[in-house]
Length: 204
Image (cartoon, rainbow, N blue to C red; front, side, top):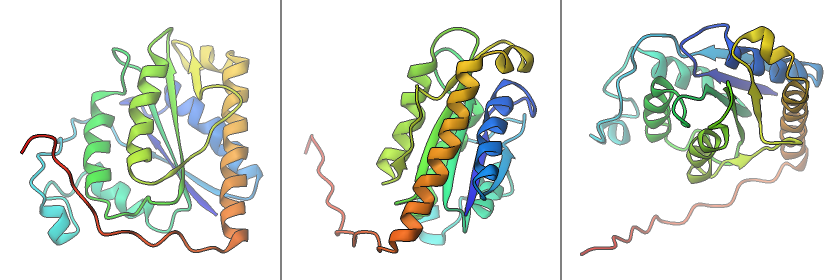
Protein backbone atom coordinates (compact mmCIF):
# COMPACT_ATOMS: atom_id res chain seq x y z
CA UNK A 1 0.00 0.00 0.00
CA UNK A 2 1.85 3.03 -1.32
CA UNK A 3 0.67 6.64 -1.42
CA UNK A 4 2.36 9.58 -3.11
CA UNK A 5 1.70 13.01 -1.58
CA UNK A 6 2.60 15.94 -3.85
CA UNK A 7 3.66 19.18 -2.21
CA UNK A 8 2.75 21.91 -4.69
CA UNK A 9 4.19 24.75 -2.67
CA UNK A 10 7.45 26.48 -3.61
CA UNK A 11 8.37 26.15 0.08
CA UNK A 12 9.65 22.68 0.87
CA UNK A 13 8.56 22.66 4.52
CA UNK A 14 5.87 25.33 4.77
CA UNK A 15 2.16 25.22 5.55
CA UNK A 16 1.24 22.76 2.78
CA UNK A 17 4.00 20.39 3.85
CA UNK A 18 2.75 20.59 7.44
CA UNK A 19 -0.73 19.50 6.35
CA UNK A 20 0.58 16.73 4.11
CA UNK A 21 2.86 15.47 6.89
CA UNK A 22 -0.19 14.95 9.11
CA UNK A 23 -1.90 12.97 6.34
CA UNK A 24 1.28 10.94 5.80
CA UNK A 25 1.61 10.14 9.50
CA UNK A 26 -1.95 8.81 9.58
CA UNK A 27 -1.28 6.71 6.48
CA UNK A 28 1.87 5.24 8.00
CA UNK A 29 -0.02 4.40 11.19
CA UNK A 30 -2.34 2.34 8.97
CA UNK A 31 0.60 0.44 7.44
CA UNK A 32 1.01 2.45 4.25
CA UNK A 33 4.19 3.71 2.67
CA UNK A 34 3.78 7.49 2.28
CA UNK A 35 6.21 9.62 0.28
CA UNK A 36 5.99 13.43 0.12
CA UNK A 37 7.17 14.64 -3.29
CA UNK A 38 8.11 18.33 -3.47
CA UNK A 39 7.71 19.87 -6.92
CA UNK A 40 10.36 22.47 -6.07
CA UNK A 41 10.55 26.24 -6.24
CA UNK A 42 11.62 26.63 -9.85
CA UNK A 43 9.21 27.61 -12.65
CA UNK A 44 7.54 24.62 -14.32
CA UNK A 45 6.83 24.65 -18.04
CA UNK A 46 3.12 24.50 -18.77
CA UNK A 47 1.46 22.12 -21.24
CA UNK A 48 1.35 23.32 -24.84
CA UNK A 49 -1.13 20.65 -25.96
CA UNK A 50 1.28 19.29 -28.59
CA UNK A 51 0.08 15.71 -28.03
CA UNK A 52 3.53 14.16 -28.31
CA UNK A 53 3.08 12.38 -24.99
CA UNK A 54 0.19 10.38 -26.44
CA UNK A 55 2.53 9.03 -29.12
CA UNK A 56 5.72 8.54 -27.13
CA UNK A 57 4.44 8.17 -23.58
CA UNK A 58 6.65 11.05 -22.43
CA UNK A 59 6.24 14.80 -22.21
CA UNK A 60 8.53 16.73 -24.56
CA UNK A 61 9.48 18.97 -21.61
CA UNK A 62 11.33 16.21 -19.81
CA UNK A 63 13.89 16.26 -17.06
CA UNK A 64 11.84 18.23 -14.54
CA UNK A 65 9.49 17.62 -11.60
CA UNK A 66 6.71 16.26 -13.84
CA UNK A 67 8.89 13.49 -15.22
CA UNK A 68 10.21 12.66 -11.75
CA UNK A 69 6.68 12.55 -10.33
CA UNK A 70 5.45 10.23 -13.07
CA UNK A 71 8.25 7.82 -12.21
CA UNK A 72 7.46 8.07 -8.50
CA UNK A 73 3.75 7.50 -9.22
CA UNK A 74 4.23 4.14 -10.90
CA UNK A 75 3.14 1.42 -8.53
CA UNK A 76 1.34 3.82 -6.19
CA UNK A 77 -2.10 2.91 -4.90
CA UNK A 78 -3.28 6.40 -3.94
CA UNK A 79 -2.42 10.08 -4.33
CA UNK A 80 -2.78 13.31 -2.39
CA UNK A 81 -2.17 16.65 -4.09
CA UNK A 82 -1.47 19.62 -1.84
CA UNK A 83 -1.21 23.33 -2.60
CA UNK A 84 -1.12 26.72 -0.97
CA UNK A 85 -3.96 29.03 -2.01
CA UNK A 86 -2.90 31.87 -4.30
CA UNK A 87 -5.67 34.19 -5.49
CA UNK A 88 -8.31 31.55 -4.62
CA UNK A 89 -6.53 28.94 -6.76
CA UNK A 90 -3.72 26.41 -6.61
CA UNK A 91 -0.17 27.70 -7.00
CA UNK A 92 0.97 28.52 -10.53
CA UNK A 93 3.73 25.91 -10.33
CA UNK A 94 1.28 23.19 -9.29
CA UNK A 95 -1.24 24.17 -11.97
CA UNK A 96 1.39 23.82 -14.71
CA UNK A 97 2.58 20.59 -13.06
CA UNK A 98 -0.92 19.08 -12.88
CA UNK A 99 -1.77 20.01 -16.47
CA UNK A 100 1.24 18.11 -17.79
CA UNK A 101 1.12 15.30 -15.25
CA UNK A 102 -2.45 14.30 -15.99
CA UNK A 103 -2.33 14.97 -19.74
CA UNK A 104 0.70 12.73 -20.18
CA UNK A 105 -0.14 10.07 -17.58
CA UNK A 106 -1.70 7.56 -19.96
CA UNK A 107 -4.36 6.48 -17.48
CA UNK A 108 -1.88 5.97 -14.62
CA UNK A 109 -4.31 7.49 -12.11
CA UNK A 110 -7.59 5.92 -13.27
CA UNK A 111 -9.64 4.05 -10.63
CA UNK A 112 -7.21 4.92 -7.83
CA UNK A 113 -8.13 6.91 -4.71
CA UNK A 114 -7.09 10.55 -4.74
CA UNK A 115 -7.51 13.61 -2.56
CA UNK A 116 -6.65 17.29 -2.57
CA UNK A 117 -5.39 19.33 0.38
CA UNK A 118 -5.00 23.11 0.50
CA UNK A 119 -3.53 25.55 2.97
CA UNK A 120 -4.52 29.18 3.19
CA UNK A 121 -4.19 32.15 5.46
CA UNK A 122 -7.89 32.98 5.40
CA UNK A 123 -10.03 32.34 2.30
CA UNK A 124 -10.12 30.94 -1.25
CA UNK A 125 -9.67 27.37 -0.08
CA UNK A 126 -12.82 25.82 -1.53
CA UNK A 127 -12.17 27.33 -4.97
CA UNK A 128 -8.66 25.86 -4.95
CA UNK A 129 -10.00 22.48 -3.83
CA UNK A 130 -12.54 22.52 -6.64
CA UNK A 131 -9.76 23.19 -9.15
CA UNK A 132 -7.62 20.29 -7.93
CA UNK A 133 -10.53 17.87 -7.63
CA UNK A 134 -11.37 18.37 -11.31
CA UNK A 135 -8.09 16.77 -12.39
CA UNK A 136 -9.00 13.64 -10.48
CA UNK A 137 -12.65 13.50 -11.50
CA UNK A 138 -11.90 13.70 -15.23
CA UNK A 139 -9.25 11.00 -14.78
CA UNK A 140 -11.71 8.47 -13.29
CA UNK A 141 -10.14 8.64 -9.84
CA UNK A 142 -12.09 7.97 -6.66
CA UNK A 143 -12.20 11.08 -4.48
CA UNK A 144 -11.48 10.53 -0.79
CA UNK A 145 -13.04 12.94 1.68
CA UNK A 146 -12.69 13.74 5.34
CA UNK A 147 -14.83 15.06 8.19
CA UNK A 148 -14.59 18.56 6.67
CA UNK A 149 -13.21 20.02 3.46
CA UNK A 150 -9.49 19.10 3.44
CA UNK A 151 -7.96 22.47 4.29
CA UNK A 152 -5.79 24.03 6.97
CA UNK A 153 -5.50 27.67 7.97
CA UNK A 154 -2.43 29.59 9.05
CA UNK A 155 0.34 31.84 7.85
CA UNK A 156 3.15 29.65 9.15
CA UNK A 157 3.66 25.96 9.99
CA UNK A 158 3.26 26.77 13.69
CA UNK A 159 -0.09 28.47 13.03
CA UNK A 160 -1.21 25.50 10.92
CA UNK A 161 -0.35 23.11 13.75
CA UNK A 162 -2.56 25.23 16.01
CA UNK A 163 -5.49 24.73 13.60
CA UNK A 164 -6.65 21.70 15.59
CA UNK A 165 -9.71 21.03 13.44
CA UNK A 166 -7.68 21.31 10.27
CA UNK A 167 -5.03 18.91 11.52
CA UNK A 168 -7.68 16.46 12.66
CA UNK A 169 -9.23 16.70 9.20
CA UNK A 170 -5.85 15.73 7.72
CA UNK A 171 -5.58 12.68 10.00
CA UNK A 172 -9.09 11.54 9.12
CA UNK A 173 -8.27 11.99 5.44
CA UNK A 174 -5.20 9.77 5.82
CA UNK A 175 -7.17 7.04 7.55
CA UNK A 176 -9.94 7.25 4.95
CA UNK A 177 -7.37 6.98 2.15
CA UNK A 178 -5.84 3.89 3.76
CA UNK A 179 -9.31 2.36 4.21
CA UNK A 180 -10.21 3.00 0.57
CA UNK A 181 -7.03 1.37 -0.70
CA UNK A 182 -7.43 -1.63 1.60
CA UNK A 183 -11.06 -2.04 0.50
CA UNK A 184 -10.13 -1.96 -3.19
CA UNK A 185 -7.34 -4.47 -2.66
CA UNK A 186 -9.52 -6.77 -0.54
CA UNK A 187 -12.32 -6.77 -3.12
CA UNK A 188 -9.95 -7.85 -5.88
CA UNK A 189 -12.38 -6.69 -8.56
CA UNK A 190 -10.96 -5.46 -11.86
CA UNK A 191 -11.90 -1.91 -12.94
CA UNK A 192 -14.62 -1.49 -15.57
CA UNK A 193 -13.53 -2.11 -19.14
CA UNK A 194 -13.08 1.19 -21.00
CA UNK A 195 -15.37 2.16 -23.86
CA UNK A 196 -14.00 3.57 -27.11
CA UNK A 197 -13.80 7.32 -26.55
CA UNK A 198 -16.54 9.47 -28.07
CA UNK A 199 -15.78 13.16 -28.61
CA UNK A 200 -18.55 15.62 -29.35
CA UNK A 201 -17.76 19.22 -30.27
CA UNK A 202 -20.43 21.80 -29.61
CA UNK A 203 -19.66 23.79 -32.75
CA UNK A 204 -19.20 22.08 -36.11
